[in-house]
Length: 186
Image (cartoon, rainbow, N blue to C red; front, side):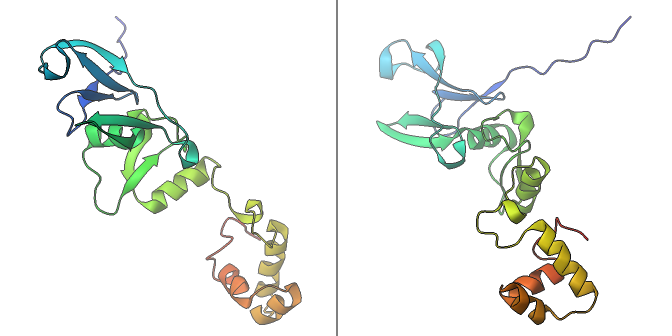
């Protein structure tokens, strides 16, 4: 007798503050109900649920949806709606995280509340964090930073290296004390 692998089931939860007229799914979908009897219909008179379309014009391509209450429209990020409905309100000092760094993947299994550092580590792990020589304002290369580290190891003063390279001495100190360019090793 083979054991069946349990399948993840689709679930929806109501979006708080909207009287049951909107629901969010654990797959990242957002739904609006159309009622029989128009605006005066009660929550038990659901005619059908319609999936809402997303707006992705926000910075970073995060999906947004607009919800209406009392003739006023308000935009929400879909990932925040999913997290709030299924994991509770945002804890103090936390932010939303996409574990795979894909701003369009709003599946509950891909979302967590976490710290800014955890969010940065997720982006680094997925290769989406711009750092080092790939950063548009970088004046150094990985190869040059390796050379600086070797020179510092030999005992050459940081101020002398900064003069030689024509960069601020604080940049050399940040490399020396491993505050910047931490991904580069000798």
